Length: 246
Image 1 (cartoon, rainbow, N blue to C red):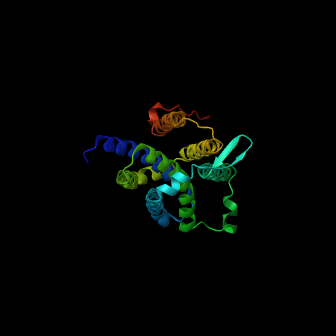
Image 2: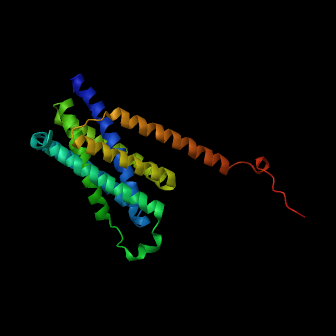
């Protein structure tokens, strides 16, 4: 309580966990939208709580997590550790899911939905946990490098989960209400998946570049939404007159 470095680490970790939480909410929003309406809210809450629980468990097993940085084997001049293998698997999984969802949105196979197995809450939560495992490994290793106080890490995770539970409903509703935003979110997942694969091969990409480009894309999309809304509510007397032939 009296160590100022603990408070600064808590602020930095809380910010990191909130950023990861937004990624989870977006991913859950896309997956849960296929569930029945009455189950979507339940899937969102369970997904966030399960993701937070996984990070706490990884923190308690921090010794194992840190050991993942040890090199296991090499291919040519590139060495691979447990962490890098997890990043590679997570990147491939993320690109696969995002590409599949984009294909579904663009090509459209609604007419074939009756022949497909409907997704369940368990399937949605399972996919969320797979993705969160990848993000959590990286965030836990980062957290260990920022502070030695495990309680500070746990507090940051639990606080971030609480904040995201409060904010996730608005994010969830917004993403699902705007098809263009959902497509942008899928593009972000492709970007993150590509970044994970690059990091799996030992190529570090500064996170600032990634989040700056995502922030700019969101800003442009917000402007587009405002323009569409303005056109939708444009007063009748300002619209072009319709000339009917006699």
